[in-house]
Structure formats: structure tokens, C-alpha cells
Length: 231
Ligand SMILES: Nc1nc2c(ncn2[C@@H]2O[C@H](COP(=O)(O)OP(=O)(O)OP(=O)(O)O)[C@@H](O)[C@H]2O)c(=O)[nH]1
Ligand SMILES: [Mg+2]
Image 1: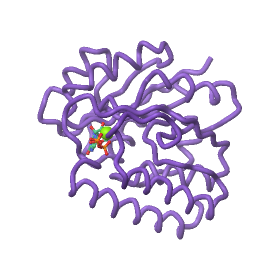
Image 2: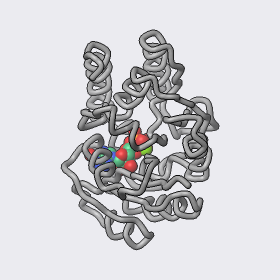
Image 3: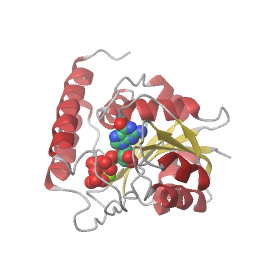
Image 4: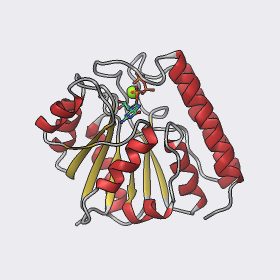
């Protein structure tokens, strides 16, 4: 039977984090939930621990947090699942993301919020458009169909290790999608529903600075990976 580790990057998410962890554990799928808290100034780590997560730390940055989470995964795990710590990804979909990998038909299963049902205000126009545009570009580059840069995704651990992930901030999600496609992994995209964050403050899409920093990093990632040689 496959063992699943959940990795949740969380920065100042003391309000939503406990229910995200509990909802993940309630699915009965994960063997462990790892919350990566880098520099929260609130009680994110404490709340995550109380809810049953293992908490690890890393230097600031979304990609660094995800990478630190992967390094902390228990050696027996063969599937790593990622989701955000703000309550916007719906853990009830964990099973649908994990099963195709557990059954051996796919290596990488990614949610698509644009193909799922979205609570009003849960994604803004730039997020929807940038996910679609990135998808079209990756279709041209690799012939793979993606419709979102959804953070909610599961991947075989050994396949992830071979992708040689480098992005330290918001390019991480796109880098994984590009490298998975380039490596010829068996990829499946499934619609997932999406909610508004369950409290706390937006770091990315809800602020001008966050949108600008993330947008710049995403474009840089696209160019870097598209023009780099397959390792
Ligand atoms: N560990 C860590 N987590 C981060 C960092 N930046 C963002 N996050 C987490 O990454 C996830 C995505 O950030 P959000 O602020 O929700 O960004 P968003 O989804 O574009 O914005 P919302 O619309 O407000 O949800 C959340 O779980 C954040 O707590 C970081 O530097 N380190
Ligand atoms: Mg969010």
C-alpha cells in the first residue's frame, strides 16, 4: 500500500491552518502531515502541531518551504501531496489526487481550479488567465494539457526527486509542471473545487506586491526551464 505525506507551506496562517491539517487527516489518506512554517510571526506552528502536524522550518520563500517539506518526508513515503495552508484547497479531493498514483496509472496528478467549481472571489482574473496562458505555452512546448498552476497536487516521490527542482519562491509550482511534462511523466489533471481563504491575509494574489513578485518569478521560471537543457 502507498504511503502518503502531505506538505503544506504556511506563512502566518494561524486562523486556517488547524482545520486544513485536520481535514487532511480526516481523509484517512496521509501517513503524515508536514507544515512548513518559515518565519511566521503568529501561532501558525503551534496550531499546526496541536492539530496533528509535524512542523518544520525553512528560509523564507514558497519554493524553499516546499523543498524543505519534501526533505522532511518520512523515508517510507512514496507519494508527496502539496496544498496551501489557507483553507482554499479542499482536502476532500485528496483521495482523487492520490489514487491514480497509488494504482500505478499516473506519476503526477494535479488539480485544476479553473475546471472545478470556484467560490465567488476565490480566484481573481489574473490567476485564472495566467494559469490558462501558462497551460497553452506548455501545450506548445511539451504537448501536455494544463489549465491551471494549482498548488494542490500529488506526485510520486521518486519521480519528484528526479525533477531537480530549483525554484525558491513562487516559480516552484510551474517549474514542477514543466519538468514533469518534459520528463515524460504520466500526468493527469482533475477538476478540483476551490474556496476563498478561510481567514488570515493573502501573501500573493490579493496584494499588488505579491502579484508583481509572483508574476515576475513565474515568467522567469517559464523562460529558464524552457531554455534549459533537460538534466
Ligand atoms: N512557508 C511559506 N509559505 C508561504 C510563503 N508565501 C506564501 N506561503 C503560503 O503559501 C500559500 C499560498 O499563499 P496565499 O497567500 O494563499 O496566496 P494566494 O493563494 O495567491 O492568495 P489568496 O487569494 O489570499 O489565497 C499559503 O498557504 C501561504 O501561507 C512563504 O514565503 N513561506
Ligand atoms: Mg491562497
